[in-house]
Image (cartoon, rainbow, N blue to C red; front, side, top):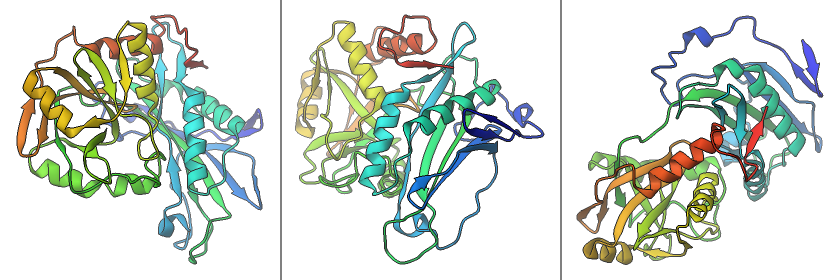
Length: 354
């Protein structure tokens, strides 16, 4: 064992890296050798440890299993063109993590544990960071209520864990989506802006129904009138309408996407006009009929951008024009990847270098 900056490190006796086919990665299949674990009890966080990845032990009465106090983040580390490694937008991910934890009445992980834990974990498992452009080391920090008590209450004990795994890019081919007008992802005053487990579990049924009808994902609408577009599946959604990049405004029912924020920033840098405003379903219909909508895409950590080819609205499939390298979504994706890989200058300070 060794201790580095107050983090005890116990290395695995045998790496599983040789089991990974980096040419045929599957999202979520491979998990790196180590994980960080840190417990909260008696009003304070204990010393974090980095240990070999293994199953967790918990009581069947752990509160997270019954009442949903569980929050996570999704981040990525990238191997740059010079061989260096960076963790993308660490600060913004931490800030969102804090907001999610606060909304779920959970103990907030100190920033120094979050940042230093990620840094040392990625440094230890740096050989797991893919070199192929578009691939990355996915990072999953999460906190769950670990107190063993089955009465309905706010937990007084938590466990913070970070694990990682190499992943490919997602949604490289254009997808088909269906505007959902019955089920909702989130309601005003709810937890839609938080990355808590319940938001994702509740989305499974309508998503599976859409897939059974031949669509890849749903376009979520607002929880009051089903009048306005909010998100696309697990991602924020963006449209190019009349030459402008348009996306729904942030609210307590929409996730503050790190990729969303990054793409809006880069679009403005390229000279494109951006609008963060309500987007009515009826507006999309009209834009299709008038030929004013030229692009639609999801934006998120896992996929970066997911081009949308077809949008099903009120019984009709509307098709977007075929995509090519001149589309804004690919310019934005390339611009973001060039910053992450160190090809372009990181003028925004987004790369956290190891």
